[in-house]
Length: 372
Ligand SMILES: *Cc1c(COP(=O)(O)O)cnc(C)c1O
Image 1 (cartoon, helix red, strand yellow):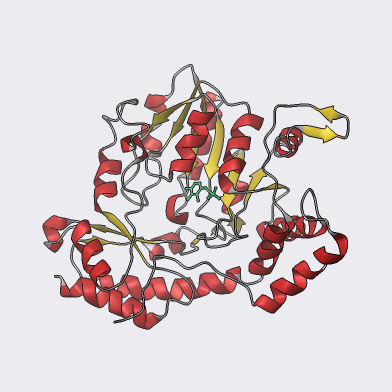
Image 2 (cartoon, helix red, strand yellow):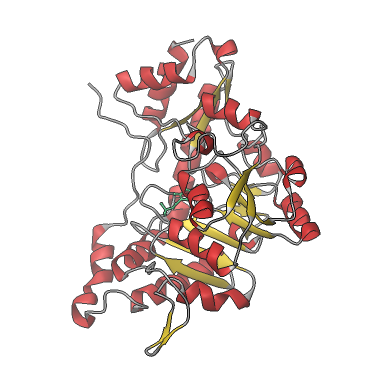
């Protein structure tokens, strides 16, 4: 029996490098709250991303929650149902009504042509997701946000390392959130960041992650505890040195996937070549395929099971749609989400991580081709 292959595998730096980085902590005993490694990591990230304003957090979800609080969003926020639970939870937790917009068929991000009809006098923002690291229609979203005076926020949890014409994807809109969770392209074990345009949010983005504390005798807001600790910052700092190399390795594997699966009629993959033409540099964070059962003769669930019986674990990511979750079912209008429903019922993300190996990609594709 072949070894178990999971859908992803967390990246780790050489352990000597990590140990060396954290060794100083046994001298300083300074483990969290604006530590030396934290500050070093923050600077390193700003340079890597070419961004002006960046704040670190304990995880991506708290980062998103704090964006919503700092930008004082309320009323209604237009968002996508084709995402991880975090995006919607952050909206709802803040007492805001999510208004779900359908996705496009090309890269599964929010359909910018369908947003305007959802805007009401209560709308305060658009919260879009660069799902699978695929960029939203940033131009159109920006122009809608401008026209209606809405904030534009990106959940860029999947999109670390993605650039558009050389510019990091985090530098668009009012604010973007990255997740540095262990399963993401780039990790700090757990972690997150907010990149934002306007300095006026700096004060709240900082104090909200530390109980609203601004000084020893000054608490200015009802804040959270969402700080990144030194061990996480050290992991992030070490992993950052390898992220570009890891993305290159992912790219090779994805090219094999695309080539081998293009032989199966009815399997749609991300169009990386088209992205290149648009000036997009992908990060190959996930490898989603959408299976049209009328052409393939088998369903997404058939592929999931066939791979599982070969000890290969793919994921139905994102199924079910957020709007189908027990906690949200029948609470929101879901009539106009046909593409999101179609994709969610047919999508499967295949294993992808830097050292997956071409042989494993060939084996996975061989199994799928064999079902044809
Ligand atoms: C991972 C993820 C988050 C949450 O990030 P954490 O760091 O796990 O809290 C939010 N949105 C999306 C789309 C994600 O994939």
